[in-house]
Length: 327
Image 1 (cartoon, rainbow, N blue to C red):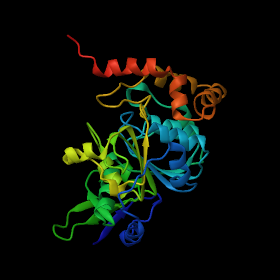
Image 2: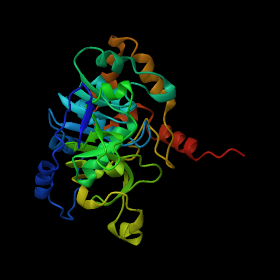
Image 3: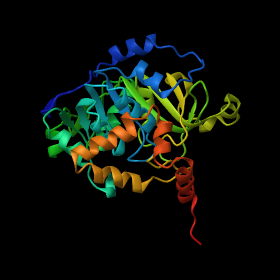
């Protein structure tokens, strides 16, 4: 296949499918009890220097308990998949846990505004960045899930995004047309938040999944956080709704309200007041440090964080907002 052009930025992960296959060949697929805590899951699977991916979409269905724990445990020099990343990126940037990012959507919290602290960190010179489109990153995960070394798209042709990527323009051997070849991406570890899971890791996602199904199949290690754990018999009663099968999963953590302050479809709405508080306090680095000490470093668990954000009373208010139907 003829290469016609290529991006100028570095490729952070090896796209060799045989190396990935060697890893997965050694990974157990046993149907065993995988229940653990967020602290234990991060200690075991998120190591300094590894490449991390976070599931969800924007502030929707993010595994925020794992994100907080990564920051609290002081992880450093991670690679990060900035696919559709909003509040999760904001939190990880606050901990300065990563030093290289595959970037499609970062720093912005959609209509809420930009994270000033994340922007400061990205402009500090401490982080290497390679740019991609959202679809290109999804195509990279899909290629990994399929066990091939690259995927093909047209979406970055003729753009500065392509120039700042690590992709290549190739000539189709059948038609002679130009396509963008994007390298497969196997994250070392991914965390995905789901509605339900059993103790083996069979997981149910309700609503949009974006690229999480591909991410689950591409990640070398997968941490599942779930709003609730259910008996395996419930999974077996309707197996067609299982989004992620047990054999892809390494750890299962039950975390009610685990996407807070993000949204969990059909369960609770995002806490817009608390997200606005994050954005406001970031204007002053000293005040932001106190904020982080209070909400992340000064608590022992995500449950304690929820208590400091209003506890069950606030969660019930967000549940009502999600289920509100106007007459």
